[in-house]
Length: 140
Image 1 (cartoon, rainbow, N blue to C red):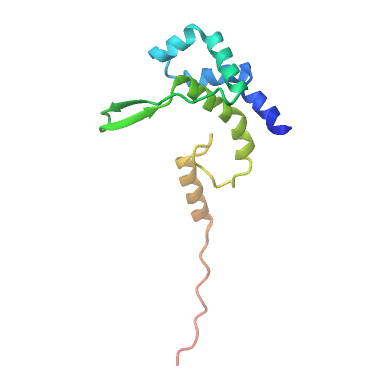
Image 2 (image 1 turned 135 degrees about the horizontal axis):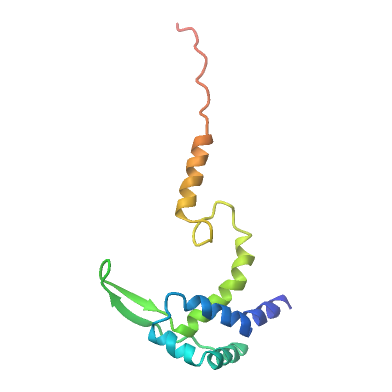
């Protein structure tokens, strides 16, 4: 079954490791990341084993904290393991679903975004030529 094959790819060690590499970007000096990396291989093997039986895998509670820049707000951050699982899914699902989006979808897609959306709208507006005015006629 296709879904079983896809799930097996998602929980493969190579995909989990690739997901870990993305999750740790910009987090190399955070304590949670350092603890995880200290036993990286065993942590990824354990995570893969949990995911083999979906009944065993339970997302951990979010870590909640307050930041004050640029203004005071509460942040809820998922556990490091859960971020790895999320990225592992994204790596394999994203290419399958993005190809079904219309070309004018810009949010959260590599190579697209606000700047490309604005540029495309400008290009469309520049290519638009208004209809000619009606011919001048006789007035009564």
